[in-house]
Image (cartoon, rainbow, N blue to C red; front, top):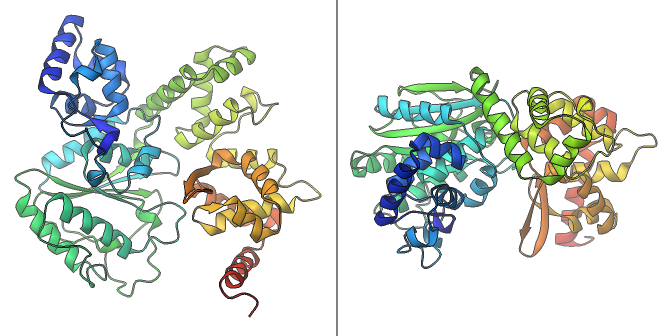
Length: 459
């Protein structure tokens, strides 16, 4: 897991155990003080690497000097060779992560009670499926693949290449890279690797995490009877898959292995506790939010309860709303005017940004829909070329939609993409497109024409 994680020396662990006893704490109390999961505390005391934030949190809670107990033997140089190929996504997903102990407990029970199998986390958009999986991957270091939201290029071949490379490297299988030419054309090579890993696992479970099965592009697959991503029907002993999928979406997965479908909606009470913890953490860390609460003339508890109620246990709702409050995006906003649920929030922001105003703002609409249709990170300069507006105008529009966008630097250029696939789906709802008078076909043709001109000129 590279420099984003660290572990304590044995002497450091001994010091931590002594400090825990002197405080009269159980490990459950330490977990609460640090704001992490039980698995993180267990990993710390077992000498396994944990996230830097939690390592520092444990040291602070126990009054230890982190510099004196950290194991530097593997951290003298950046551990680039062992960095997870999806580390950037993982870091992004687990930012401000809280709780979900009930999910991790069920995963552990499944692995401990079954010889192999598929554990699937099911939930609505914004409930934190990807964050849960990212947290599990971060803490366990297991093989993983994230079908990137809003990316049109999520074919099975991409998954097979990613996971096969990880398995070869992690379990030191006797294959050289690049992979054989036919390794990603079907699931035979993948299944062969799983059989070999099962032999080398030394009695330990082998977990492969796969996010967003509903985002997989199966349009180019010729074998219509195959499982999604060529996931095996028969699993070797000790092989487990943890997957996530959007509620209400079915994907082809036929298996004789044990399965557990874990529905987040069945755990409303536990979700509510985590939602409230998340809000409290954000309040504690933001003077702007605390000031806004005072201006509303409510207590922090009243604020937390009301926001939690309106969120409908949706974490993405909280991300958007709390960002809007903190950045003062809606100057006339008050607690009672907040929309109910994620979809209503999309509509709320759409109206607040004047997307339905008459006369209609074609610039705003063109910027957002060109960004959405690209479905990959794109620079504001390129958007300005697509729509014939100045880069400054495009930047101004993007700034007002910042909470819905993922910003990153690629080869020195600042690029943007839609942060969450559910917002992309909102933009493509029939009534939204009609109200905005958007022609998706026209936008895609314009993009294609620009690409053609860039490659071949006016020919």
